[in-house]
Amino acid sequence: MVFSDDVNEAVAWGVEGQLGILPHHTPLMTMLQAGELLIRRGEEEQYLAISGGFLEVRSDKVVILADGCERAEEIDTARAEAARRRAQETLSTGPAGVHDAAAEAALRRSLARLKVAGRKRHRPKGWL
View 1 (tube, one colour):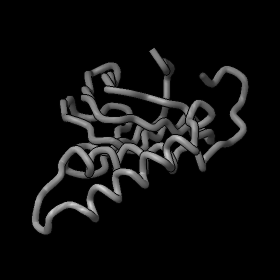
View 2: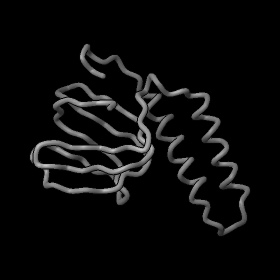
View 3: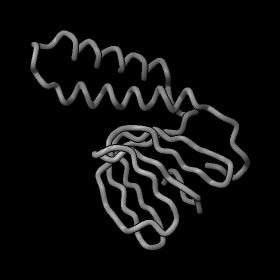
View 4: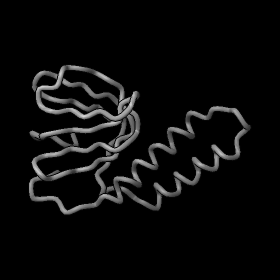
């Protein structure tokens, strides 16, 4: 478990776009794509990089089962940048018109990691 607490809002990237979850949201379940997860508690914001998974909104909580999850301070930016370059090279050197889903997914994961790493902020005591 990476995070468990009462929050005011969670914003994640579903397969059909970005979605925000507020208290008393209608129950739903959706797949998540790699991207930034924002958790807002009062005036404080925490960003996590997730690499896909599922989000379920229940009547009393939100459950995210992520394929991978990293806090900003855990991200190795040199490694994420290398992964971004490899994915972009694969996409740019492949045959025209060929869809490379693995390279696109790798690019999205690396971009999410780099974006979250760039958001390193001071967090108050108690934040995980």
